[in-house]
Each structure stands twice: as structure tokens, then as C-alpha cells.
Length: 279
Ligand SMILES: [Zn+2]
Image 1: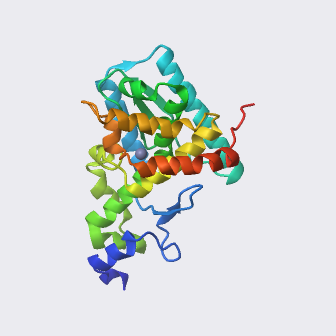
Image 2: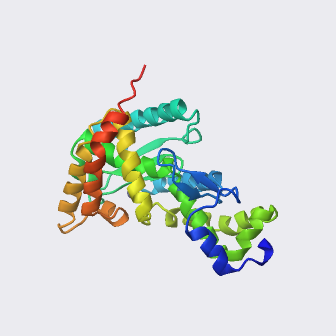
Image 3: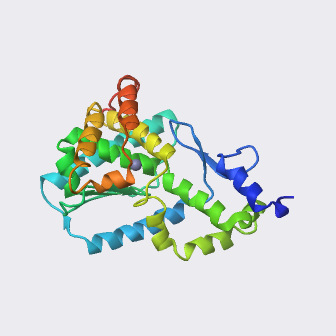
């Protein structure tokens, strides 16, 4: 009986991925088709993220005018358009249809970072522009961040956290009764959880590799030169040797493998995912 499922069994059941035949608790990452655990409601995450984002905006110095923010918005709009149109054509369903895209440029040269909150809230710090140096590289950074959001990596992390934190209680969800109770349990601290669950904490290696791959595809669809992506990571690891390593590196572990992968994928992606032209 599922009532009596023990914690160890429960973790076993979920830590190796999903069992789609049995439980309606999984979704599939677009393009890579990786099955991911998805029991935490996406709407909750996006709402918490939107609040955290507004809060962030009110507490940080933003640059709202000028060439840099214009470029960020231009790149973002192009990626938005490309992603949305690609999925509508391929799957008939756009994973970003519930996103409310927004872009900010944070005036802080010391922070070499960028992030995308669930639901499409994107921040770029002036510090990382010194590493990106050109639009193609900035598109690589933004494409990677947007990929985390499109692949719903935060929903996945929150869902994994649910299984770990609540253990057997979560089993109740599948009996239909306890889902609201669970939402309340997590909801109490959701304001901060959103930061813990995938914005400032590193994603897992699988998610990083997936974001690299999808990010390349999105940048290519948006018409950027994706050969710049591996060069960007080389510059990133170069500045890692300096006094102030990029924060981007702490949330996005660099490795030779990452650059090797990008170089391995680049030709195939250029051929398979050509730019989607705007009408
Ligand atoms: Zn990442």
C-alpha cells in the first residue's frame, strides 16, 4: 500500500528519475526529452519569483536607459520570439506561454553575474558585460539562463526538495488528498525558497549541461553566432584566475568538459536550428 511506503523506498523511487506510467508527477524537458520530477506547482514558483524579483528591483541600482540595457532587451526579445515560435511549430505548445518576460541591468561592476528567475525575469550585472564583450557572448549567457527557466529546472529542484523534506507525506499527494497541505507547508517560506531552489544556488550538473545545450539552440534560433559560446567560457575561466572571480562561476561550475561539449554540439546545432526569421 502506498500509505505504508517508507522513506527509503520513497527516495529510491524518486531519486533515479521518474516513473511516468504510475504517477502523474513528471514532465518532459522540451528538446532533450529528459523526464523530470514535477510535483511542485509551477504557478507557485513563478508567483514567488515575481515577488522576489520586484523586491530585488526595489533594492538594487538599475540602469534603465542607454545602449547596454537596450541590447539586453533586444537579445531577450529575439530569444523570446525564437523560443516561442520554435515550440509552437514543433510541439504546438509553447513552454513559455505563461512567462512574463522582463529584463534589468544591475549597475554593479563588481558582480560578474546574470540570472533568470522562473517565469522569465532576467537580470544582467554590468560586471559580466566586461567578460561577454559582444552581443553573441551576451546572447550565450542569456540563452543559457533562459534555458534553465524554459526547462523548468526550478520546478524540478523544488519537487526534489519536496520529496526529500517531506518524505512519506508526499505519497499522500498521489492519493489526491494532501496536495493543499503540502503546498501550505512549502508555501510558508516560499519567498526565500525561490532563492534557495535554483537562482543563487548552483543547479545540478545534469541541469547545467542541459542549459548549455538548450542555450546554444535558443541563441542559434535567435540568429546569434553560437561559436562565441565556448570562447565566452574560456574568458570566464580566464577571469576566474583574477582577484575577483565571476560569481557566474560559483553558480555555473566551469570545466573543460563544458567547453568540449559546446564545441562538440555547435555544428549540429547550427545546421539543425537555423535562425527563425521575424516577419
Ligand atoms: Zn546554469
